[in-house]
Image (cartoon, rainbow, N blue to C red; front, side):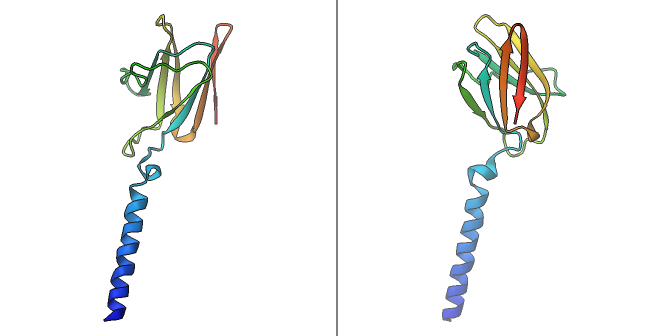
Length: 125
């Protein structure tokens, strides 16, 4: 009888461990999660993402916030999101926009945006 009690406790502990791992932030994170770093020299007022295959932009990721030059932002996707290739659009306070297309976010953990002398580029990690 003692063996069965110990066995049931061990099974319960193992089950709780599996559930805790499954519900951890890392397990809930999407494969497309990345950190966006603003090195454009301007404050970003709007930030949009959209699957590359879409003709419409998703909602503004920043909402009422802004992303100052030199700041970073962690962008998360749902675990069920399967699209790998995304487009990204930023706008400054005047509505001037820059777009990066066909970013494979499953291979990018950090995206650093730059803008200088009329040219925009992104460094990826």
